[in-house]
Image: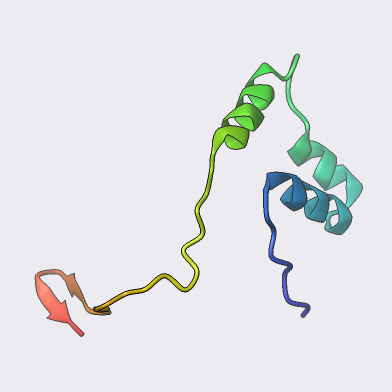
Length: 74
């Protein structure tokens, strides 16, 4: 199975889906109802998001443990 490409934004994800999915499936997922006001609002909201990747961020301490049902697990 090929490794999925690293997508930079929602437009790249849409193009990748369009290339990989059967047309009927893609058109159903990609389409909107009526005059597509909700879809336009969703796309505008996604466009306003600014994601800051935290690749290779410095960490002085790292704790991988957690608490599950009151019990501390390392």
